Length: 266
Image (cartoon, rainbow, N blue to C red):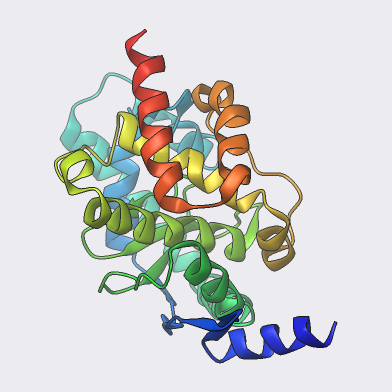
């Protein structure tokens, strides 16, 4: 017990001893910020009206939340759709401005409580690999689509998301470091791979399900259920077993990539 406590204390400050040797890792302070961005919300609403991936129809995250926007899926020209959508978003943001601002404050406070603990766990998984540079901003959204943007390290989060700010933020941050790590560690495989669809995207989403389903991470975000994309369910059991065998990110990436390629090409 004393040794365990010593290890935990040392880990908190960035050092873990293994026998006679030691491993030093860096706990990077991201300080994720949460803001409103109405212009981005308008843009994403139009982008996700006719978008399906992983067995999910993302338009449901718009129409089911805002039935008034059902007209947008009808056969009307793009300019008219944009006009209707813009007017609706302007009206909604004006009416609920105070509440949306309150949510940004709550999200910031909720995330700040567990940020360091999350960073510690991520640091262990990715062997001290630093998060890539970026803005690290979570933009609250009034639609439930929750995209992430790898180019500037920002993401959207539905302001009433049932899984909460902790889970969603952890999910998106894992994407940012996963893609960066994979590309830098295995450039021949992933440098030119598509991050928005195909095997690389599959790997990122499946990895998140496996990691966020672990006891260590569930303790941080406080949820019980992690739902994969429907098309990924058939791979979860085998790839989870592969992770639990050694919990080595390099081995998992290499073997999981080969596994998915074989399955998809069969």
